[in-house]
Image (tube, rainbow, N blue to C red; front, side, top):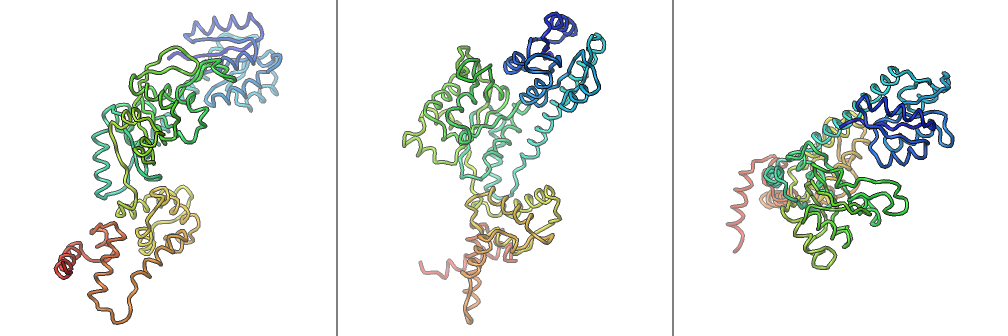
Length: 452
């Protein structure tokens, strides 16, 4: 795309001359006679560079520079003035101007400043995109080796390459947002953007305009056109988190997009094609929401093309030590702490906990332990009080009096460990220091001994 330059000068002749010079260089140019008019154009157009006079009535070039960088932090500004003093140049540079040119302008000098500023802008934007891509790549790893995790990853591998709408369900904190990033990264749309909307975090009155955008004058304060999330996600993926928090009126508009692939901006009449893949998520029982009349049944069927249920952490306890180690390494590096591992007691406490907050709760617990821990190995005492209490209660529950037959003790220990690991015999065997075959053999013996 061509670079877009906004020229701001209260001198009509200068504006026309600058537009002619820059247009001949292959740039798209729009101009304004004042800082206020320039701000209107900044809201309406995607501007790469502002070339502004410094001394203007009302809003000065410095004022415009500050405001422009608020609208778009990546925007570059070149200031021009007939008052080319060192003090003025220093002030402009301190406020973020890329360069400073003096009037009367020299064509070669002007074009060189504009070109260099645009190159810097392009480099900054590209670096930001690369950082976003790297963050996506780094966040698409799903840690775990349990059967539940393997089934989940198999589903993602099959579903991701398609353009089918996906509905992610599961308890809060299980990693639905993480899974949405994986689906996008493994899809044919991975070169496009993944745009996330938390439907519960945006006020009800603003959510429609955030999703679909709006036209100038659509409502009080709509000073110019604004692209919505469907626009930003074009050729990419739109992740609608907490979809059950949407209002019936908004659900009607979402239904039309999913059904017809079209929408209009708020206050607009032009029909826009929605070139996006939609992934939605909820931690509610969506069928119960439909039955209660709070969620449209027709929208539910449009969203529920592919259903992936993310298992809670308590259903994959064998993943807990791996996840804990993953979070430990990440949090320790972020906080410049030396934590290198965990004691067996800490791992035992983590596995025994039921994790009502799922993976998010585990990550928070590890971060707390890293920040407050005094040793390079995390111990039980570094964990949150609830986990320590839960471990103590679990140990109390399997206490035995003197003289209890060894056979009874062994059975109780194995059964309690299996309960703590969600029935995973391999993990239970590792915790008990025996083989999984021993557990299978003992269970067979107990089955023969127990009365029918």
